[in-house]
Length: 360
Image 1 (cartoon, rainbow, N blue to C red):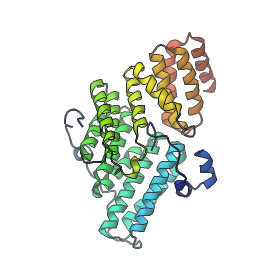
Image 2 (cartoon, rainbow, N blue to C red):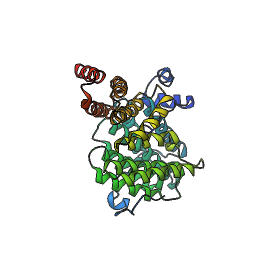
Image 3 (spheres, one colour):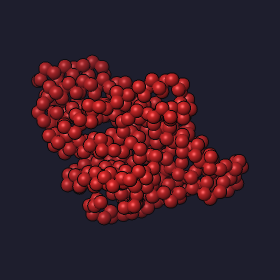
Image 4 (spheres, rainbow, N blue to C red):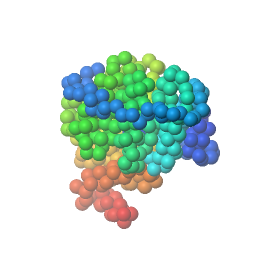
C-alpha cells in the first residue's frame, strides 16, 4: 500500500480489476500509472484489543450459498484497492473502499458457505478493512479506527496471525500519528509478537518498521534504531512466501522509513542521502508519496542548516500536496512550513512562506 509505504507502477494485469473497483474507465487508470524488538510487551494484542462480534454470522441466513470463487473475487478486489492507493489519495479511494468492505461483510454474514470458504471470506474482509482503514486515516475520517478493529476480528477468526499483525500495526501507526504515542508503541510491539518469528520476512520487516516509527514518536531513539535494524534483518530473510498485501515492501521502502526516523531524531546527515537516493527514481505518478517523502527531506535539509535547499524542496512539497486529497500530505506541509519559519530571513525561504500564505 502505500504510503511512506510504497511506490511502483501499477501492474497492467490489475488495471481491469482496479477500474471495476473504482468505477473508473480503464483508460483513466492507465494514464495515471504512466528479532529483538526490545522488552517483551506488557500486554498481548488480545488484551490491548479484545475481540468483538462484528463478523459474527446472522442467526438466520437468507443469502445464497457461495464458494471459493467468491472469496477469490473479494481478495482480488482488495488488491485492486491497494493498487489504487498507490496512485490516488485517501479522499479519492475512500468511497469505493467502504463500498467493497460493506459488500464483503454482507456476503460473510448472510451467505451460506463451508468452514474452509468462511476462513477465506474472513481473510478477504480483513484485507478490505485494512485498506479502508488506511485510506480513512489518510483522509482524516473517523471510521479508520473502528474499521481496523473490525478487520482485526476477521483476521483473528481466520487464524491468520500475519494479517492480524498487519491490522494491529496499521492501527498503531494511526494512533502514533494522531497523538496517542504510548498506544502506538504498545500496539506495534504487540503486533510484532502476534505475527511471531515464523511470519514471512517481508511482513516482519513491515511490522518492525511500524514499531520503529512508534518508538520515534514516543522519543525512544534507541528502541527506534533497534527496530530499524530488525526490519532490515527480517527483509534479508524473505523467501518469496509473503502475502499479496506485502507486495510493496522492499529495501527502498525500508530506507524511506530509516530516513523518516533519522529526520525525526534530528540526524539529517543520515536522512538526506537516503531520501535523495530513493526519490531520484521515484515514480512521478505516486504524487502523495513524493509529497510525503520530500517533506521529510525538506525538514532534514533545514536541520542540516541548508535553508536554501530546504526551501527548494519545500516548494515542491507544497505544489505536490495541493494536487492530492490527503490529510497526511496537508499535515506535512504545515510541518515543513513551521520548520522553515526559523529561516524566514533567508530570501528563498521567505518566498516559499509568502507564497504559501497567499494560497491559504
